[in-house]
Image (cartoon, rainbow, N blue to C red; front, side):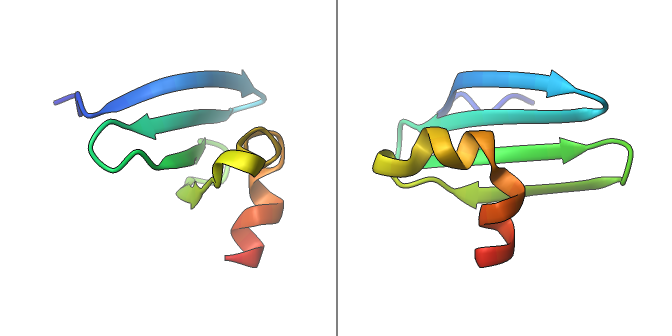
Length: 66
């Protein structure tokens, strides 16, 4: 089932890694979701509005800081 409270604002995919910038209609929060099919890893990182594109471009750097 698809979560209709989330809107995908941006998406990229390369070398088995999918990265999505998502906005929640309920909380107004931004998150970056990562799915790495090569490593079998998926995670989400909060993305403050002023850093959302940077989190989108470098999610692994922000995941280690969280």
